[in-house]
Image (tube, rainbow, N blue to C red; front, side, top):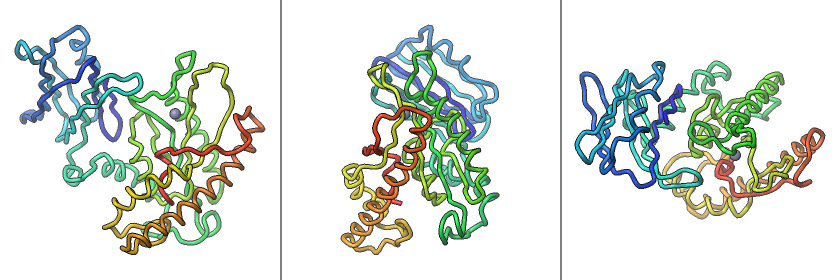
Length: 327
Ligand SMILES: [Zn+2]
């Protein structure tokens, strides 16, 4: 499968067993070569070159062949200098063993970035952000009164992750993207609100990057939109979730470890450098955030109840990864 997007291109090969591989780059022209061990070229692999579209921003063409009796060689000819990240993923849900080739444009800092996808997506958002907000202005003042209320809409899933599949083969990733786009245009009509989206195309965005994008733009509100399935087809109705206390505490330690050495902000409170004080501040901010989320979620639920059946009359709580940023 090939998922080109404006930010990066993902190529996925899926197999019944672990794929062993070696990768290297060649120049003149720039090529990424991936040798896959212990497999034979089959009818599916032979169609690889047809999976690529000519408008892919990074890949000019793909070739595949049986390099030697035990090795299949995949050659991606590149349109520009590219920074590939090749890795395997273990089976999960309906996916089997996967060999993933993520290709990023090799633009200076991405090559050295710890997380090239995050660095790239930050830049990718910048143009949009700078045209709407005064540059470098801190988001001080009361949201919605002194400055726009910043809302990050997060259409779930995307790219090779389709989310739930409906009985007419509709895909959750498409439905939630349309909902988010419509919601964004409604929000844009409000005079003192500004909406962003974690994705506005059919692209896979890791959960941590979704959260990072919201924090980067100092969003006041993060709304993740899903259209999930259940084992029982009779299930109907809407629900609203906030982060659970349990999900929150399990991430506090790791979050603190990650940000310990940075002058990061936790909900406007600077890290003190003292482990116990930081932990207390984190807890205070997150507790306040959960409490706000429950109030806000209750308002959404009330309004949803006017247009749809509800699962429950109160906001549910669970440890969703995208809700774990304290602020
Ligand atoms: Zn979902």
